[in-house]
Every structure is written in structure tokens, then in C-alpha cells.
Length: 190
Image 1 (cartoon, helix red, strand yellow):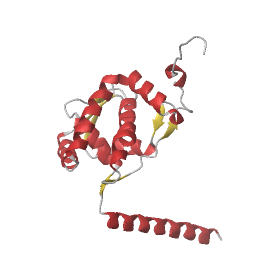
Image 2 (cartoon, rainbow, N blue to C red):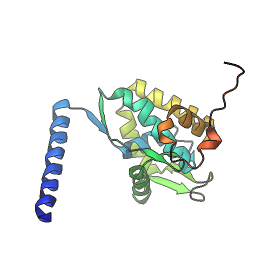
Image 3 (cartoon, rainbow, N blue to C red):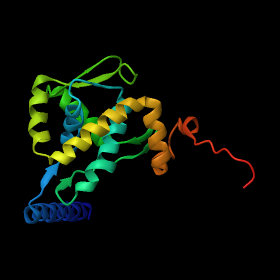
Image 4 (cartoon, rainbow, N blue to C red):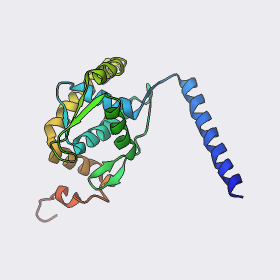
């Protein structure tokens, strides 16, 4: 009986994949993968690495939620599957992609892991690949990504966490640091 259920589940997965492939063929849209998102984000300010894993994860989260999601008429976006975790939005898929990009020689990671000193930067090989992807984006989108990347970097870790926690409270329920970023409401009698 288990083998039948296993095959049924497998057949359902194959059917879903076939539907997705058919949809992609019909819509003829460019696909933006999570791997592409990391390369695009790092390329947007290629001379400035991203400092800390928290910043990288939150910037990818915001890139997906606030910028790329506006272009679903042009692109098919891979869902990073973010969920609320210890420090707000987290994605196991993103963590795996970062490892793959490192092992494939497309990004350098240096500094102490999981600290503000950990740094993510494109390698020359990664810069070449990121350039191809970035160049294929509409000019308006390229400018939006560049502008937002500068702004997010300027926020720093505390600023970006405060922004994400305020604007995406559903992703903070499991957070170990949510009390640090609670919004203070001032006022007298209401």
C-alpha cells in the first residue's frame, strides 16, 4: 500500500511540474531564480560587499517582496519560501543557494560566520555571470534595485531589522530579538 501511495505522490508531483513547464512555455517570461536574485543584489553595488548574513537575507527578502514582485507580468519568480525565524524572515533555500554560489566560485565569503564581520562579495567569475543577468533586466528595474540596495545598506543591521519587523510582522513571531525592535507608541490620552 505504501508503494502505491508513494507512486501516487510522485505522479502528482510530476503532473504539477508539467503544468508549471507548460505555463512557462505559454507565458514566455524570463525566469528569475533565487540564485539570480543573490547575484543581482550583489551586482547592484558590485564594489560594495554586503556585511553580515542578516543583511544579505533581509535585502534578498526585500528585493523579492518590494521590487521583483511588481514585475510578475514580466518575470516568473522563484519563491524563496521565507518564513519567520530567529531573526525575522529566513529561507533554507537561500542558505543553500549561498553555499552553492560560494562552492561554484561565484561569491566570496570572508570574515567570521554569523557576525557583522561576515562579508559577501562577487568574484570576477560571479561578476561576469551577474552582469549577464542584470543586463537582461529592464532599465527601470536595474535603477530601482541599485537605488534600494544603497538605501538598505545605509540602514545597517538595526535599521533593516526595524524596517522589516515593522512592515512584515508575520515574519517576526518566532524571532528571538523581536522585543528589541518593537515599535514604541508615544502619546497621551487617546
